[in-house]
Image: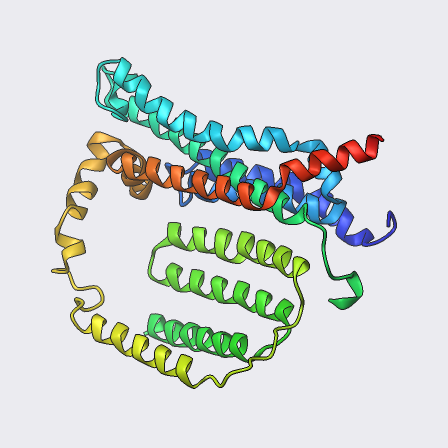
Length: 147
Length: 185
């Protein structure tokens, strides 16, 4: 098994880092270019899924253990809703990001967008990886020759 | 002119891909073609200047869905089971549904109509206020995250709920624990 798919393994090793970098770009550059938390989360999940497909489920679960994934998908929603609660504690409406910088509302909006987009990205990454684990973790019923 | 040509080519390829998906029996090829279908739709969205939607379609439709469908095939069989009934009734249902959809589009405003409800309702206000209120170049992000923050929170909760649902149905946490106990024994 070690010697199978040599080209795939080498290419994957090069690609995974680039994919994660691109996901982070889409995540944190969403205010300025197309993209945002949803797309970035999917791209980030793809990096782990590719790694899992080529190197096996056991290898990817060492990088991103299942219990971390399960915490991740709840944590993103918590970040998002927590931002809303935080603005309420600062005396503004739910999810009114002006609260983070009352003197310069646009700065507060930038911070608010950054944080909630991060929450979206975290949840989407967690859900996609969790779904992949759930599918890939079941015993397959067809062998490699049947493809 | 060039837009029209691009649209005609893309839509023709979409229809051809859809026909190929219907005719194919090897599900591996069907999954790959559905990825192609998503990429073609993404290109259509680009020609409509809906870059964010195109991005999502390419990442979710062509990327993740393809992988998950492949995972599903690995759990089932790679060849479609032959239908036991004639396709007559499904064909009628599809025809009626299609006719209803086409009939529905007759009432829609023409493509690019400046007086369409989408152009005169809150859209112009968002466009006008974003530079002062939020000051980000991508208005889509401003609307999603700030003006429509509640909706996006709801969407995130939906994604979360969907993930929990799949985990409950498929992950088999208890079975895995039993396996580990067997391994240790």
